[in-house]
Image 1 (tube, one colour):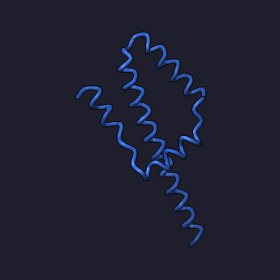
Image 2: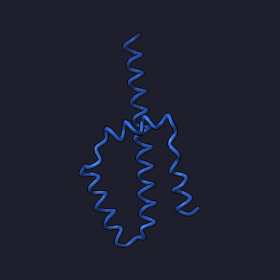
Image 3: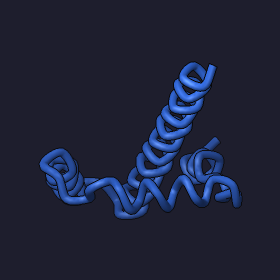
Length: 90
């Protein structure tokens, strides 16, 4: 399996039910943070040595992974809220 095939497996089409979660995360998470600036500096340094295509694939894979992790965290948080509401209602 080459990098292109593996990155295609990571990048899954966005389903309609995940659209609202992704939209909410995009609206709520700050994009310009010190952590991101550090990542951006490292990527810029890598561009001096690695071919552009590999960097695009790497960046896309990282973004897909982090989007999925954020979505999962959001869903777990929503489950916690529902569980807490059930306890309070009982």
